[in-house]
Image: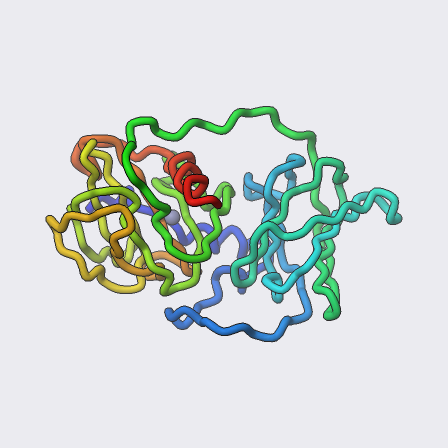
Amino acid sequence: MSSRLVQCGIVVAVLAGMGAPSALAQKTTGQASGGATAPEKPKVKAIACPTGKTTCRRGELLVVAGRGMEFATTVVFEGRKGRRDDRSARPTAAVGEMLTVEVPSSARSGRIKVVTRGIGASRSRTALRVKAKARVAPPAPDPTITGPSTFPIQGTWEILDTYVTKFGGGRGHQGQDVFAKCGTPLVAPTAAKVTHVKYHSAAGHYIVMKNADGHSYAMMHMLKKSPLSVGDELQPGTPVGQVGETGRASGCHLHFELWTAPGWYEGGEPIDPLPQLRAWAAAAGK
Ligand SMILES: [Zn+2]
C-alpha cells in the first residue's frame, strides 16, 4: 500500500501542542464504555476553530477540549469585560473530552467559559477571536452516488469540520475523520463489493469496498479485522466492522475515504467525502 496513506495522528499532535495532551490522545479500552458516569467539574484545556487556530467566524463550530466537556450544559462567549456582550450557546455535540459549539451570530472576541449546571465552570486560557460570518455555499455531494444509502456509522457520531480532521490532500489526509465510541458498528453506506480487508501500520484494520459506479469507500482504524472477505456483496447497512483506533490513530474514530472510479489505488482519486457524509446524515435525519 502507498505511503500516501492517512495521518490521523495529527489531530492529537495539534491539540497536544495547544496544551491539551489528554484530549483525544487519551486511550480508551477499545470497548464501548456503555453506562453513564457522574459529571466532572469542567476544565477547559484548549479551543480550536475549523482552521485549527483560535480565530473563528460566527456560525462556525468551535471545538473545546478538556476534562468534563461531555457534561457541559452551556458555553458562554464572554466577549469584552462585563456581561453585556456575553452570549450563551448549548454544545451541539460532545464526545469524550471534547465538545463542539456554534459561535453565536452576535458573539465577540473574548474568553470561553464552559458551564456544567450544578457542578462548576471553567474558562479558556486563550481568548477566541471572532470574525464575521463567511458567505460560502456548502459544496454539493458527488451526484454520481445514487441508490439506497445509509450513514456508515450506526450510533452516535460527530463530524468535526476542523483543519486536522477534514480532507486535505496536500497534507496527506485523504479522508474525513468521524468520531464515535470504540465498538460502534460500521456499515456499508450503499450497495458495494468488498475489495480489501487488511491491516496497515498507519491505517490499522481497514476495509475497502466499491460500489457499482466504481467509487471506493475506505474505512480505517477499525477495532479489529472485519469479518467480511474480498468479493462479499454488501447492501446499504450491512455490518462491516466497528469503530476503533488501530494504526496511527488516537481517539476512537472512523477515517472515511471516498475515491472516484475506477477506485482505491486502482486509478481513482480521493475526493472530499464530507459533502457525501453530510448528505447521508441528512437523509438519516441528522
Ligand atoms: Zn483520518
